[in-house]
Image (tube, rainbow, N blue to C red; front, side, top):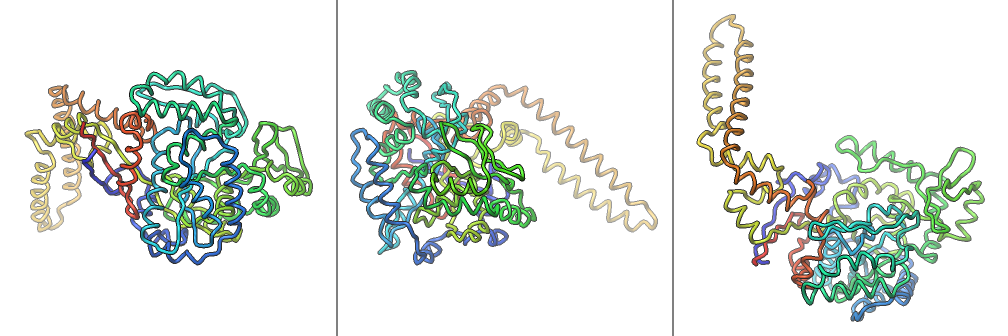
Length: 530
């Protein structure tokens, strides 16, 4: 892949106004951010004290000691883990749910992004070290969101019924799906390597969290990626005071509600404030703790507490308490020496709601940045796009808009130009009519509106006629659109990285790292040459 094109987020229609303004460094977002990210902004934060460094490094080392790895050179990972205890070392972090086989593509893009930023900062800032980290959402229990894989257009599903945190699931239960996709993997030596990585990880690690760490380390260990599992009693003990404070004063609901009032002046908040923000995790069930004005309770556990009983249990068994999406951000920043969080558009949108909450809880609010975005084209697809006169900007338009653009470009009739002629004539008529004392000029407005309607109607008829004359164009555009935007979603949300790994091996990751933009939010289009 050599051909590369980058497109501004302003030219495509995939992102909300909040995200477009974020990429444009719009001052309306200043109250909700520490600052917009830049090299100088990162340098300005290097004097912030980060507690728990020794504990964090030691706990991560213990998590790795409990994981079995497949023929992986872990030297760069263990070197980074040991460095985490030092005061001049910071993490660059992203995170995600534990989707099976590390799919879809955007999960890989997240990891690539933190590696690219860590590499860049380690080159640009001397005397400090930056470690790429991936936070595994091991405590999430929304199994439906992680259980499916789309590979070469076929869907595969992890067939389980569970209410447990996904990291606790038995990793061997995924081996049935691995056997189903085995033939697809064994197309090349790279695919054989990937099969061996999966097979070893899921066969030799008891739970899905450790198995996922094993897979991630086999693929990204050479880049020094450190994988963090927050479902840990020692980590939870560090965070216990904040869990207690949430039950005492509803910090999340109060602060997010207040922030949302300000945010709504210009934007729609990503997530509404919630009153119940902590789950109970026990006996293979993760269930939200609710409050009914007299006591706290978990329906799935058939258990209730007074406030004092709940606070006492947090002190004795902090590992039983699991933060939701809002509190997870605080938890993460509480235990990690983090300076920059990289996330997708939805993540950055809800992080923007949390600055006041961080200030209230007295936890450092990190710098925020979007992860990388890529679109891949095969050579055949690129040739067709060129042949039918589509440019890169129009790739992100709807199917109907693509068709309209192509046909209008090739049509003998240009309705925009023709209507402009009529508009100029109407302006001349208006000037003359204005000299006619007492003439009801509004009648010209009515005529102009009717003319617009008829022009639009005639344009639609011509477009419909030209569609009927060009069935091949319709088929080509439909094929391109459905390939790049399957199920009317983006490529990165549906397709797996596996076909690219089968073809390129780790060279695929090297390419993405090389092409990942730094402090420059753009959609990158990469075209294969063969």
